[in-house]
Image (tube, rainbow, N blue to C red; front, side):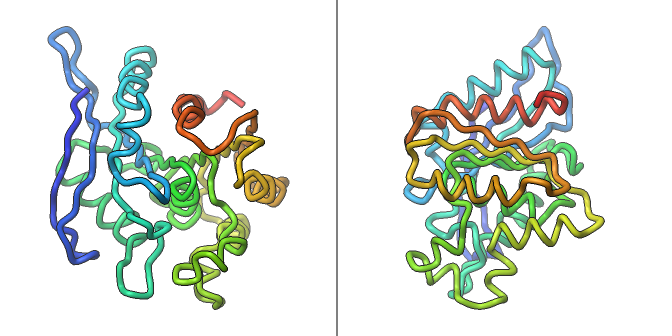
Length: 253
């Protein structure tokens, strides 16, 4: 695998921007299949685009999985700062950037597939929320979304993040995962496959239970798992492997 730090101009954000990218690397014995499937891997509130590569073995997991399953997967790790992957009141439109501009830039720069079935989103904590939001808001672009210890209940977070989750119907329609899932459930649009894991000692555990209960009976392929654990990288390092299994094994329930 090749690991790249990519610097470019974001016109949506109006600033220079950095993201980390893992790309398959061909060996003399084996030529990688192109274009590559792509995982957009999102960080949490206190992290940045370097966190997944610093605190987990994501590059090794992707390389091992690619060899075992004969597939080529790229991983894009963007920086969303503390935006909660939302379009903010001050004009920093992080959701528009990541869901639209970033995807276009990455697919222009690298040999990435532009097919919906080859794009996936995953993340932890704030990034788990972001991944679910990408899947539920842009089902025409992302075929799978996976959340680890996700901050999935925007209504509960409103008091702490009122600058992001405004107390308006417009904000709820854009940012509330429950409303986004309900709207998509009633539509004829394609629906992403969804995976959620949370530790039973995690402070966000109830958020995940609430989301799981809400999704029961909906017209989604939805898998929920829980196990002992709290809010730390030790568990996310393990569970990102489970998320990869879910992404690439559609018949594994």
